[in-house]
Length: 395
Image (tube, rainbow, N blue to C red):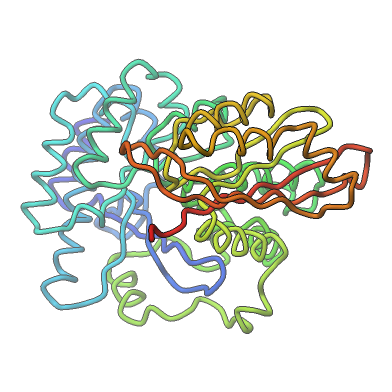
């Protein structure tokens, strides 16, 4: 089989087919995945499942991957030379590449030879490959990302990797395996699992792609989960380079969409709202005063970052006071003391606000406004607090 494959590559029988990936809301093409196809001289096609497993088992899959990389770069170079629209293209790479000491250098050399911007190439590797190579995968992925390429975890949900494992991977894209859509998103358990995965990925700022989308029911539900991209027969099948180039030139929506505001689902609206809140309040904390616990929802671009993301509320206040200017420490500790907050709520207060000077990670004090909003838990007697912290300008 290997010799037949090598000969097929020499004869140009192995070809890169492209399956477009579309924005889940607008329906416009935003990227693509390159998929290998073996086209015989008589025009017949040999399915990848007839030769890829053998190539994977015997190790010569790496030669196919590099061949595909060159094909993709040639296509992107053609678009560049002809001033045509370009979109990022994902290329599948086998787990065998993790053993290549010069993988990143070789990938850079091919991209640079064809004058392709590194961000236009996405290195796609299956989650199962990552699980089996935990000891080496982190350094390998970091090297690829440092060189400017995008990393995608493919077939998520088909293997055994945990969310904790994905959290530790320096990846940019999470591709949801089509097996998770097997019940057309009508099964309650399937919907709960998908909602959890998309929420998890979005909180990690990963781009999500749903594979194998074939029905409008699947599309509509995926939109409610704030899925970013759609790949599947509903929009487009894998196609030849000529047809893909034509799609890129037109780059029109794959379907007619309604007004963007009318299409917003509750989940999308919630995420948009949270983005706006985080722009003003880089630190948002949810606390349960009754149970003396807290959880930090966001912690970005704040003046000081050395704070646990979850834990005991009283310890959080002690930590916060220690980061204040000496003249502000006592008033901060007294104002946000758990017992005092519970008393303030009992007295009918709806919020508590205080401006203090906080020591930043750079060693400078800056004014910070901290506001606690009291909320009564509708399903219990617990008293909750949402804390919004805002960096104020120095005067």
